[in-house]
Amino acid sequence: MAIPTSRTKEKGEIRIDESKCTGCGLCVSVCKDFSLTIVTGKASVSNTAVFGCIGCGHCMAICPEGAIEIHGRTISPNDLFELPPKAAGADYSQLLALLQRRRSIREFHGREVEPELVQKILSAALTAPMGLPPSDVNVLIFDSVAKNRAFAKSYGEYLEGMKWMASNWFLTLMRPFWGKANDEMFRSFLKPMIEIFTESANTGTNYLSYDAPLAIYFYGSPYTDPADPLIAATYAMIAAETLGLGTCMIGSVHPMIQSGGKARKFREKHGIKFASREGVFVIFGYSSVKYKKGITRTFASVTTVA
Picture 1 (cartoon, rainbow, N blue to C red):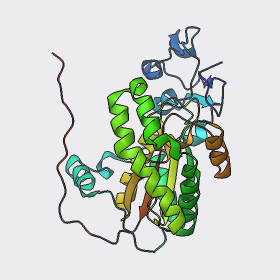
Picture 2: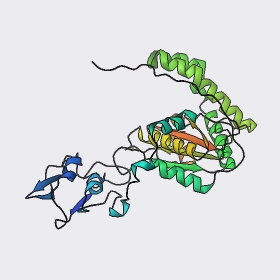
Picture 3: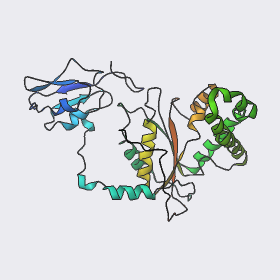
């Protein structure tokens, strides 16, 4: 048994064609599970594996002779493809320009995002480094303004039953337990957030996804590395920028639908398969505004270890 995910709990099967193997050792050098070794000049499956093959495919991808195949954990030789030439990639200045041009967009034309662009966004997001394979990132797509409005209304109605979490008496009661920072965040962010989303559910104004023609929710499972959905979402946003789309991360949904019976029912209602530690909505669409200037950002701190 290898490291479990929601998709598989079995280790990958390593197959070696000794007639093709030259014993170069590249596969051994890239396998960090120690699943491979060289025996009498040929690659061989070792008996010192740490976890058992996780199906990363590194050995299969690096073998110059095609002597190794991995089967299982949702991977097979059919998943191999030739890497694009280095010249086809963006250089640093091109990448930096792309990232600098991206801003969070909440103003959209009514034009729908074409299905082929949605697929391109997903294809790019699939290249994100998402922890131990196979990826445990789940994707939920809302591909119309109407679907996003309906979800925003449903979410506002759901928050109606949670207004007590933003009440003064509850915040005062909890402050000694969760500390000053959480108290400040609840009072300055959570309280007004609940108020505006519940109000918009009654007025029909969409302050959640801003009537974007496309929203994608990236979330995990109980097995997922918490960073994985966020990395995939970031790749999706960068890809969308290359396709002429504006994007914005919406972080106000995921934390509120994770715990309790009502949250479980809300997830089931909307086809969300799991509660997970991290997740994020991203909205996409053709921007109705154009920016001519960017804003320089800073980190909280940058320290080089001595």
